[in-house]
Image 1 (cartoon, rainbow, N blue to C red):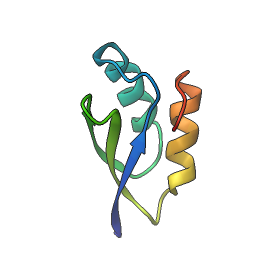
Image 2: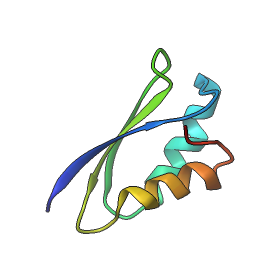
Image 3: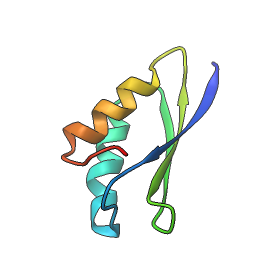
Length: 69
């Protein structure tokens, strides 16, 4: 397993968005953990590079109804 960290800037990130975004990220194969920073408006995602790519994570954000910056 090759673990990597993606830091994804999300437009208008609020704490109310966390459950929907967490669920969207967890549908991506290989995602191990998701954390958020409201101050920086980012999601920090630990994932397995052998199972998914950053593009998969970006698509998950869009599918959940949010915009990537």
